[in-house]
Length: 212
Image: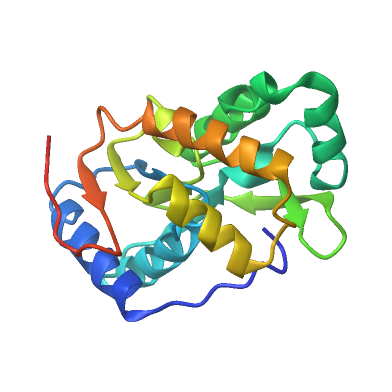
């Protein structure tokens, strides 16, 4: 996302190091790490910290933010959701065809064009990038762990209450009753994707990892 504010803290650096230490011996050409989890849990920040750790290891990576791939742009998404009902909220809001197209470009070392949300205008721009010589794609987003192409899946835990608090104090969107319903719906959808993840973090509890 363009103009997104990222504040990297010690917990993100530690978590990034835990992930890197786990995957460094697993990385193969065109390796995909998916980072999923609750709204406001720090997915984008962790992806940023992980990319920098991999850079220090001499590994080139690029971050793909799935929040750029919503079918409906941010400026009209609230109205669209009200019109289509709370049941419309979920993974199907993403343009999976475009996501899979970008992943295919990565897997084949091609140039790729993808959407990029400008958080100042709430409009969607298009950016071009080259995946040539890029060894790792770090894909983050609410439903990133849904991707079958991912080689390694990370889930960031956050309770529904913590999610609401993160949104309230983050100031990204007014906490209306409808917004609360959306967060609860997204919470349910995200929790359903936990099975199959290889690593879990709960920043508020500890930075210990465990495996299924």
